[in-house]
Length: 81
Image (tube, helix red, strand yellow):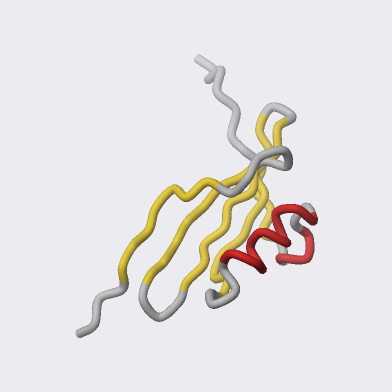
């Protein structure tokens, strides 16, 4: 039986390919972080952006759409060994 769920189409992108508003927000609010993951997902005609930023203390994963702000999904502290 075929599934009615679609799979998103994923494209890894560079930060300069983000919508200007999202790009500006990352540069301003996460200037002390580096981007370790960034992709665009398309599903049923809707686009969302997913980013992972890190600093020496934590990893932050966020999502956004072209018309929304970044929403933090997870914050993971880095452990010192």
